Length: 601
Image 1 (cartoon, rainbow, N blue to C red):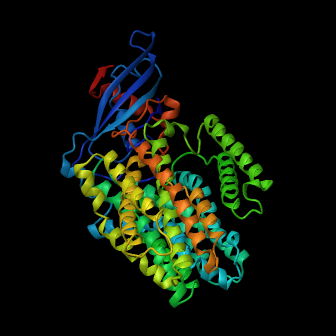
Image 2 (image 1 turned 120 degrees about the horizontal axis):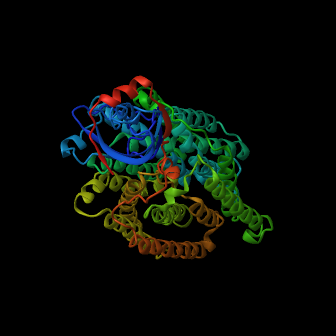
Image 3 (image 1 turned 135 degrees about the horizontal axis):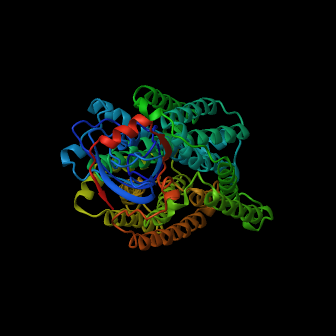
């Protein structure tokens, strides 16, 4: 007898041998699976029968659908298999944890042996996301020092110190997330950590801009590989819609925002007191510790594989399309005539065409890298646009402020770093804030609050000039933006954790930052014009934040999954849910005598 599995099972999916984080044994808990089956075979009256049956399957161990299907063999109708072979297709599989009390739902996953183990696990996974933000933030206050040391004085050369990193990081995240599902998240996590560590060590010895660009690109490759795996392990470890999961994602979002601000401070301190090269050696140490944590702290079950294969055509098209798009947008600021340079619009049009080919290939691919069905979630596309706008504004106003301090106020890198210390302090205070606010307010309104908190400093910065004091505008703006950024990143992760971790879309941010960098090095008589340019750019950011706030009003409070057909159901989530279970004749004969809790559908 053969059972063909086609369906989705919520947090535990059919044939999911990988990601044991989701399949841990939860003792003293009962998980109910509601299965709808289409059974084809000979009836007791020797005539073909086609019918659907459904029943509840209770398990005392949340150990995956493999075991559930073994149990299924003993729950089939008594008359199945008596007169001939049958085929049973599972049309729908859903998992319910409604019967669990609050204590069970909020309990620590048993695979995490103690509270200390859980904390180390969360820190290890969140560090991957933090390293990406730390790398970008540290470059904000170190660009001038790096440029002076490596003879990079033009704006285009300096901008590519950041752009080279974000180019590779953003382009590989989609494919690396898919690879983590197929080949094991722990394994992919370790590969990314090793790549980033080695690249940071060598980057500290860079002697020219070409070497710097190449190593920054390799660093982006490392974080792009390990970031989805780290976020995925956190998302898979906890039951959905629990305070424990909200706190875990709060740490993930806090780590990213805090790391960006910490990097801004670290870049100034190293540039002034040590050498800019220490930025990358310090990040190498952090990455090495994260990689060791991936070996000794992450549960071994996170290293198992899922059935399926990597969509190589989708990988190539996505990387090429995103690379050309990022290069055309970011490189336009360094081109001789900007967007009027002949190759910039050509590359932009080609990138759009390649991305369209990627989407078309995903529609036709049976095992796609990016299931298009995830975009049918009511909130997913909307949240992506909001994060694209709001997080981009947060990064760009931080870059503007760092450049304002150094180019207009003429402060040293160390004093510039000191100016961002309140950002870190308010960020640390804000870490428990999301979980507290979500206890009293709907997620949608907390998201709106975070956007408003980012909108306020954007307006304030639009009024700064060469005579503005630190305490008048920069200090309140820095403090408020830190709280808003923490809330934003945390809420975006919570809204999207059921399908894919949110990505930080920084192409627009980098383009605006590079535009400002074109004015770097202006002398004293041009300071007023430079300040006017900053204010103009901040008004543009105000418009982007206003649009994000308007879009937030259309976010639905409840995350509802759309109905999908059986072929699509196996790819709605990032985990695979397809396979075949062979049941021998002994099982068939046993199921004919076993009792079942069946009812006709």
